Length: 102
Image (cartoon, rainbow, N blue to C red; front, side, top):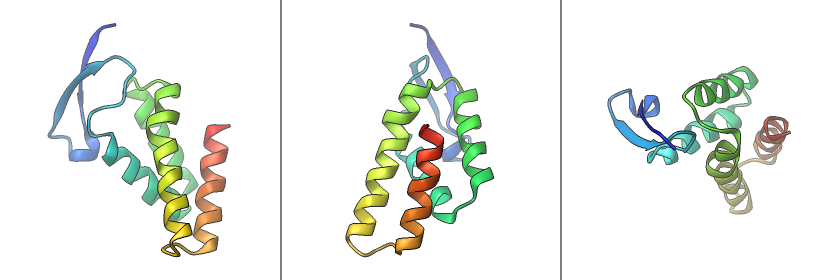
């Protein structure tokens, strides 16, 4: 598998990372946070743009689901269980995430 040099746009476009093609960058936590914020806001177009941008950078769908979608869901669920998120925000975020994963 080849090595790609990608600019991590989530870090302001300054950090470069080397990684196998189709894998999530080292700073995937930033991608999770960005997806989380977008999901909770309920902005469907922004969520779709996030996915298109990430896949256009060479990230495979399987890696996106396991390394970004799943941790974002865990964060959403954890915050809801701790009463740090409203029920409506929880439902909206999980519904958007489910639509993306399907």
